[in-house]
Length: 249
Ligand SMILES: C[S@@+](CC[C@H](N)C(=O)[O-])C[C@H]1O[C@@H](n2cnc3c(N)ncnc32)[C@H](O)[C@@H]1O
Image (cartoon, rainbow, N blue to C red; front, side, top):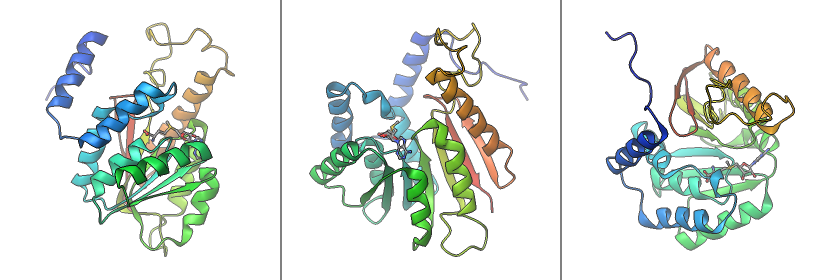
């Protein structure tokens, strides 16, 4: 057995080429959903909020591999990743989105209506509050995707675990369900925030800088998930880091 292999790729250009090639060798995302991604990318300054196409392929694969029919998404933006989940679970499945920005939620709803995505709902409001209102759901979720405010991640995880206690009525996440948390490496800063990381922002030493706050919050989340006996975790060093946690009990 090898002790270790080269973890990623030698430089950014090679990383991009490998990503492009890998995406071409992976399942197909339907054209209308890809077109929506391009449209948002072209038209909006904040389009980097969206997951990438290659990550979308991975999420569809993941959802189908575990036979997911119900997905809860925390952080909807203008509705792209919810379309991905909708496609993954199929028309018999259900996607619930939580988003606190009314304008984003409205744009998302319009896009879902235009695209004929009938199995997605969005609840507008701060996710921590909305989550508590989901306590009376009829069926647990198979996947919970966390992609919102980074300082909220640990709180969301605690809430999800509390609302998914073994044997509890109306649990939020089913046993064997997956919590997928996005941006859990933040350009590698979570693992390496020293001079070896070319993406280290100039103001990173300031604990009040936005990136320092986000990185501290994500480190807390990663440790919380990894050290919890109820979860089995895998932090995938692709995209901006995707931390998968399988609920064991
Ligand atoms: C990275 S974007 C989500 C992108 C989306 N998942 C996609 O890939 O298409 C994060 C979203 O979380 C929302 N958000 C931030 N804090 C939130 C909170 N406390 N409650 C609910 N939504 C929040 C933001 O308004 C933003 O739309």
